[in-house]
Image (cartoon, rainbow over the protein chains, first blue to last red):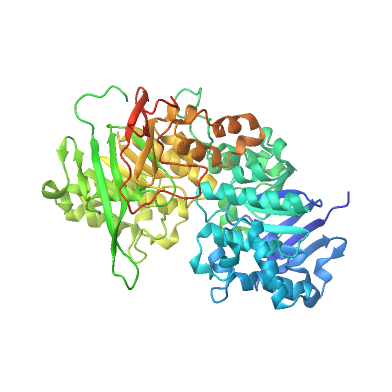
Length: 309
Length: 329
């Protein structure tokens, strides 16, 4: 199968006094049609920037400084801004972390959903409003005929996130980018929203790029997972393999740092969680091999100012 | 931990906290929100008790009542057998030595215009430590305890990372040597790797300083890792309480089961059968306030129907209605 999306050696850089500094370095992965791919990593590891660069939403002064982004064999970097606008929301849609800031507070949610049909499919507003109701029904918002007239502030967090999902999936995109879609939600609701995303995308054959720092969320949703650390993709494999047998020392650290359910059973007393920092400084030679720099060096911009390797 | 003699360190007896809520704008009808509706809890010395539940279930209100920041509507809170509510309430100075709080967001809970030294020295001065050298020693000592360096005291909060700030928050809570530490979502604002360090630190401190923890969290992975006992709250009431291994190995109340089943388990890919086992409910007894099938949630404005905690194993209790309906267990 030809991949739907292919990233080849993506670099995202920020200009600095000593020239360009790459904060996402040489990231390559591909997503097959209908596949769910997860990106995990800590804050600042570059996972969101990678996603934003796909749909050209990087804010200045950030920019893509190298690599190829192939979407259905089109090079997205070569596309005009106008063509990109047509693609965004139509073929590639995105769900953001905080639905309250991502939705327009001055428009009813029905109007915001209907907008998608008007802009991308050339429907009339009357037709689009009808479609908005069925779109809301599809994301399991109760009483959709009434809810289309509600404003975002009148809805709970999970209902807002459902509206976001309805907007994102309105035009049947080929790829859905979900950036921490449930981090702002309560545990019990989080599960419902994730299941909704998974079901809808499975039914429509939509591929998903799920970004999360929660390994549990990734494990439940994705077939393949990429682990990012300091702007690099350090491991990219089947989800099962990553959890059963993590290869990269950072992935191992990340898994060991997680208090997992059931890990205390059968263990004598409380175990200490793995401290990634100590792991990293202790293993200089191994790090060299895996191009895995000690964190302290990365945190200090003076050390890293040399740019990409 | 189980062998307890004398009164528990902290005891909460039938705590109720009600909030008056204005009705609609025109009718001026006042309603009462039953935020905490009859909570009984006890904390033994050196124990870590976790209170779990979703937002709005009353876990933070319970913590605030213990801290003296929220006047209980009725019920009593006892510290070492003595009441610390209403007419028996100790002054703020005494209360500060009983319990201190570690807050969720280390970015919001430190004064940005005070150096760490100033933040840590103020409570010491208030509590009668006036000699500069004594204050310096105490601050250096407490910073070392949380794995920071004494020279960090001269810096401002913005110069620290999130994990370091949370260490300062812990140092601030510990500087007066309180008996109890209230941890309100202590690690949920932190990244995975930093989270592990803070959890390790808290467990070390608990051992070294023989502290008692009351932890509020909705992260069940952290709860299982840290707790000795767990109390599950649902709409102002405790629905299940017991030793951590009983709660996690044998969750019985349907709400507890739902809570455990819904957390995204990173091991789900490795052991898919385990998660399924928790999600399966074996003939639910009558009289639960929690209804997983219905959309309607309990009415928070009405006093809950009478129910009681029933022991099902040593120390392990679940809430059901006292009616002997003959069904279920």
